[in-house]
Length: 380
Length: 140
Ligand SMILES: [Zn+2]
Image (tube, rainbow over all chains, first blue to last red; front, top):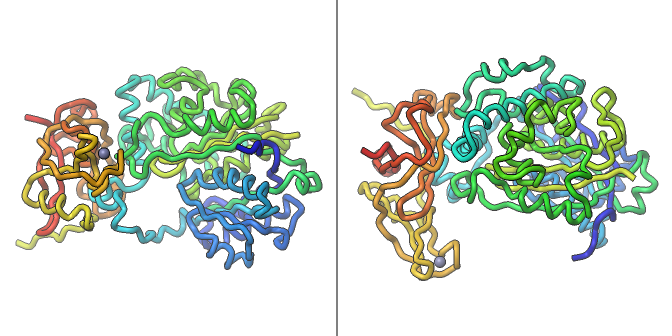
């Protein structure tokens, strides 16, 4: 395999103009605002874009709405991890010469527009899961958490989920863009209502309106960007099922493959990571992703996150934006992980800035714990 | 006495699953099985998902299994499930090997009453004239 490490960089990141509850804007407008903002962040213009990436929508739709005619197009849609996987595809395309400036966009009026999406009845999930009420990820992921509790202990699992919810809220309080503005105590967590046992409300991510965009370009062009480049050192992707009932092991995502592969490509180990950005669709997602990535072993996650270790001031900064749990989550949150990692690596995060943040590992999870994409990012 | 029409989502049988749904209507649970792997699998596919063999057949399942995992749904995912909540979604390890999604019924929707690994057995819920959903209850 060609060594693509450090051959391309992220030069622009942005959200759409307003995120949170934005009833007056469509999903595609969120795409467009975020694209304009990210290109501005990069010091590039729309005419520079020759590679277009999105998920959920086809680039047919985003290309049309944004007025972009790409010469490289990728609509890979494997859930909320897709945008992290797009980074991997972008660096491959840039190195192959298929494009030079890759624009990845996401937008979803997840809160204000809940028009159901038509689904193909021949999909196994439609035939064998949906009729039983396996509808929506809280229910699917909750079944994963139950299995984990059975294997590794209910009380220590519960404590771990609480640790993650509480620590993530602390970070959100330092992010002006975060939807959640109030502190969360452990009691608040435990007293929040049941959504799908074993999940409380505060185990579950938000549902917001938001857009985001990321610009990736070649090493050569990155050197002349407006801000310091953030290099892609490693990237990997995988998936191992569609619906939760065909997940081979409900306590282990394919982060067990993508984490080591991305770190291997980067030539780094876990101790090199200054900031972990881990898709927190649910508290449980974080718990098993830390294990899958290899920060700790299977079943060791509860010990790893104990004592607010991932909170501000802890020795393992994680999800410093406030995450999908407390910052924003429009439907497919993965791209927002990249935005925060890039801002931290540039030193733009003010009160919540992680000191000497040089290397970040970003892991997205999509579907019903189905897919993961991992990237390792670094400043110069 | 008017009966409420069934408003929850229904499966749409497909060519490879017509037989499965015909048999559930007869209150039997049948699985697709590979003659080369000697292994049953779920969900039904004409070709074996392990080895791509076309040498596959239908076998009747015992209807017995154990609970692989579950969740108790308190917040109904759609209005059609509101009257059911709290209800139990579950994944069952069938005696023949495969795992299948289902509901656990005839049980208190309370975590103290439900245990991963508990023995369960199939029951058939005739939700419409055409569709019968196999569900599971604690084994008697
Ligand atoms: Zn086979």
